Amino acid sequence: MKIKKSISFYILISIVFCALYILLAIKPLETEYQFSPEWKIDATNPSVTPATEDDRVLPFKLGQTLGYFTPDGKITQFVTFPQKASISRSYYTSYNSNNTQAKYYSPDGKLSGTINVTGFPMIDEDRIFVFLPGGASFVKCTPDGQKEWEYGGTVPITAFDSSKSGVVIGFADGNICQFNTSGNLVQRFTPGGSDYNVILGAAISSSGEYIAVVSGQNRQRFVLAKRSENQTKITAHEFLNSNEPTQKLVKFSRDDSTVYFATSDDLGIVDVKTGKIRHIKLKGHANAIQESNESVFVLTKLEDTYTVYVIEKFATLTGAFSFSAKNAFILTDENRLYVGKDSTISCISISKK
Image (cartoon, rainbow, N blue to C red; front, side, top):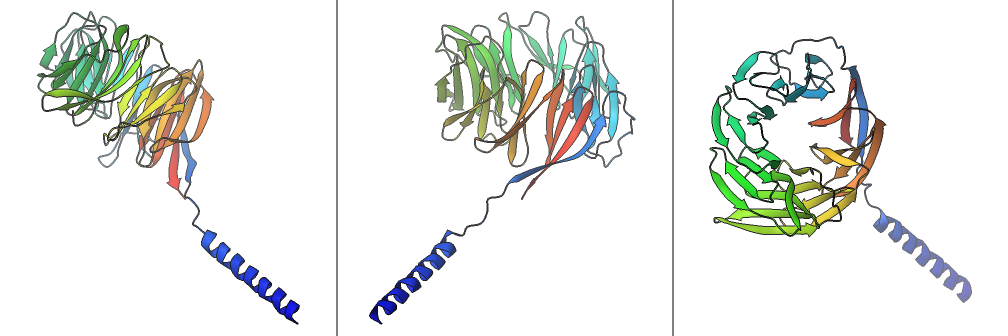
């Protein structure tokens, strides 16, 4: 009898232990991102439907065509251009190699102004710049196309970025200059640390407080600099394995919390607050970064193969897909990813389940 009671006791204990283990081990499943194709449109000879006042329009440029489309797949503006063009959500323009004047237009195709400056226009959001012949100077234009201020130099410009706070320029001699919105010099510094201190990529935060740079050869270096009390302080830096003398993509996140920079075979991701740097291996050269509400998308190119990488904040690679094309772009808007491929534009919705 004692043996039976003892066996029953151990069985009871085992049952209780199993029940407790199951209850304590239960935890909710992690949410996952779901990517669902919504539509695909032909962008080579589309049917154009003018936008209404309620339409939100998004820009595209594929090969020798550009225009605007709506989130539901309606093309509202379609333009072909013979040589070069620049487009943003605010304006678009086309120009040639002997450009002495350029007209620019709003997304509805109406003339917004004329740039009467010889050079090569670049439109960044609602900001208009013209790079002057020689490659060492540029002009910042007013919204109506007039010269607002000008930087004139003798050393070739090798990197450029703008935000609502101003402009950062990198030069072939390794110097960095930051200007405010009025064209006044805010700071000048040299990242250094290499045998050849050319600036290969630069970005300015929306606040103007931070500058991020990829520079040099033998060895290439990433530097994050903070402007504080009229002094430039290096808050993060790293020597890179890359040594290619080509332009590098450098970009701040929308909230200035993160910096992304491309090397020859990976993407560096920097926490601005802590200075911590992580790397994600990439196939090809990164040429575009777009953010959605929760994810970051990176477009790379290797020969005729494009790859889109999906990264969750801070630096977790969650997926990738590739396709063959001669021209491609990515764009995000709210919870949608748009992928342009030669003659088509596709919309992919992003949801968390």
